[in-house]
Image (cartoon, rainbow, N blue to C red; front, side, top):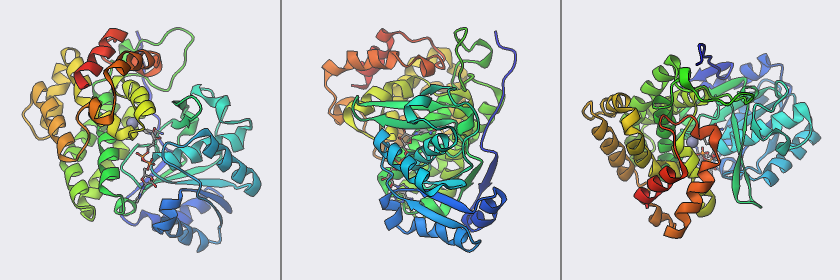
Length: 394
Ligand SMILES: NC(=O)c1ccc[n+]([C@@H]2O[C@H](COP(=O)([O-])OP(=O)(O)OC[C@H]3O[C@@H](n4cnc5c(N)ncnc54)[C@H](O)[C@@H]3O)[C@@H](O)[C@H]2O)c1
Ligand SMILES: [Zn+2]
């Protein structure tokens, strides 16, 4: 039985339209004279890297651009970014992009501070101390990586995602400027948005902090459900429910973009302390095999896991129904998520992703191996349970 809980986030959060204009002053306060800007070719071409460089240059800060980022970044991309960092010797880093580029900047800031390579830090709580000063600027809404304790990479040789989790990975500054998300295409907007909703719902329905089943001797940044996580998740669910359809249908709807940016960051603050659960565990093998985006996989699986968890979280699910604009009723919550998912074009069934029935059992077995997140689930899950969820989603 646990008696305490805690809360970590980025040291500073700056939120709002044109927040980017304050970047030079913020970097200056971190003592930065040389900044490594980590991004990808799409964002360079879209002019976002230049928009970030300008306020830095105006403050006399030297910027080196690394734009070798890629979606779901590989260990190879991490090695390339680290090599660029070792050569340039920055005194601060900026991660500009979706979760992929921010996570690349996080692992680079880790290795620049502590040496070794990315694999040395894989797992829970393996960092020995603070990383190099890091500012994260999300361009999607989103993973919440700008406030989170995670960096997710892909081991392309073994077709698996690898997670590095440590409170030291939380950026010094999360600069969230919703205007940077306006150029997100509809599919990216939909996938990232439903990922954020998944973060909020998994945190809101997680196992209680008091009964969080952490085996003796194991350490984790996740703690199960606590009151501050609940407050953040409730607000996030409401904001995403109101704004996600609008942001997908009309990318230039600034009010919707702003609501999504806030919702995603709040969801990040919630899940990165409370934890994510069975949806994310099941998405790892599904995403690994089908190469669907993290968000699309989560969005597909979310209502099926909600149904499985319903007996343990009826009251919370009813509140989710109300927060999503439906009746205060658990069944209505699931129906509301299904409607939202359909309206924004998320695949409805695993077979739509090309999954075959023969893959379901191996997926369940792989997901069962990810105990560090499965233990956050409000209902204990067996391999058979996971297979049942996948069959329902098939
Ligand atoms: N660190 C965490 O806490 C955390 C949490 C959830 C997911 N993740 C990881 O984050 C990654 C997914 O991140 P994501 O969903 O933000 O997508 P992403 O970073 O992979 O970006 C998807 C694509 O959208 C493009 N893009 C991003 N912003 C754009 C913009 N404003 N305009 C035009 N194009 C834009 C990118 O260039 C990229 O090609 C996965 O690897 C996932 O595992 C990390
Ligand atoms: Zn996620």
